[in-house]
Length: 564
Image (cartoon, rainbow, N blue to C red; front, side, top):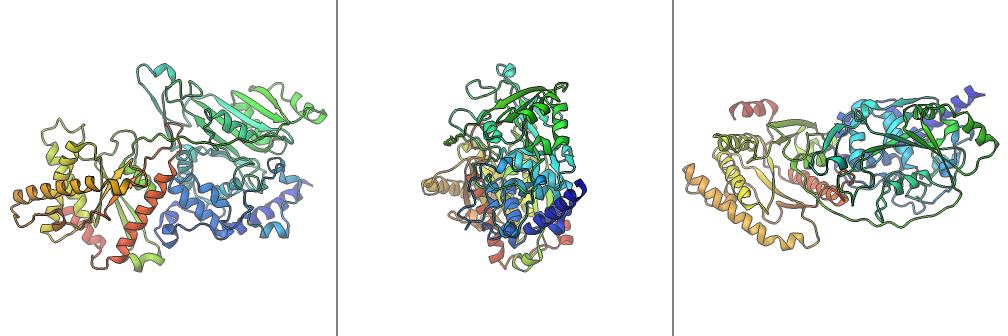
């Protein structure tokens, strides 16, 4: 009977959560605050060695905007983790006993099951952050989330509300205008893709081909031929994923001239009637994939004659596979994105200069790292850039920049300066301002560690070949320090390293470009994510090894703020 099936499905669902080590977080007990805590697990870069480590491996990589995070659903020593099960997309578990003793011991997890489990265990704020990071990786995001036993689902509007996208329709190409809008409020055509009974054609792979141009085949949707995609799904049937195609305004690059939204229902529509009915109501067109139209299929299809959405049948029984090639075009990114990627936080980001003033965020340090780091919290401060064009016309712009630099550097034990080597004039002005600030800190006995980040720099020879530029940078820093020392009447100070801790070899970081391709459809470059993760690890290791620097207590920190 139906009640017995639901009860059995509930037991199987809870067993699956237990297998992942998530049962204590269900429902919605995994908080954003607890995940952002800096502890030994958060700074380790090890791959998952057990099924219970998969959720944390996935989240860590996702919050680093690493597009390979979905591979965490397979163990590193599992050679057959990506075996293809051609029936994987066609197995609808409510009609089958999905768990056996062997299943429970199996180390193969479908990435979709892992994602659904995490969303069911995450609180609303963590759901928002996961959704935002998935969108940055150009992954589809949950629109309708099944509740494990497939008896009901949740419309994930709250989780989607932070996703803001930019695009340029072709009718704005000449004027170089663009549209920036919250994606859930945008008026965009909505196309749904569903499956009826068994289908030998993978609709997810089909969608990937539709949304990719030429030989650039992006695995936006997980399908049976990607790693872990062929593993039989346990709890993800009934999931509706959504993604958006956004044009950049260039005819040679765009697939569609206008934005469009695409939804993908996992599993047979016969087992997910609630989701299918919803999609029929909201879709501009619905594409139904099936292998054959016989009596049962014909009966279901004829019952859909009065629906609002246009229906298209995709009938195909041929199988195939594709080769993949990727092309890379890199654009610039900023310091707020760097901090967001490094610590999984959400400082405001946008094209151009969007940060105004200074933003401060406290991150709790886990009990297992408190003694190593000698602190209870790590404070992140994100500021607007120096030498802002918006303030350049004001008479006191230089004084404003000096005050801002002094305030931030005065509060900091570590200062990260994001500079563009190609703009020497602006760089020189910024260095002069920061030299003044560092000098003032030297006067009161505070010696800050300084790191310079050079973004959009990649290549195995980048570090070696940039040595002349780094030496030139140090010469400029020394020159600016001497000028500042004369103005502050401290002629004994001759070098930049007299006022702060700086090593020309260790304190310069080359970070590749953020995007892999042309925005707005480009995913985040994995090399960017890896480089930022290495930078973060180095920063925390440096804090561990330096036991001489006294950490400020919160009352002292507040007094510093007042005095500055």
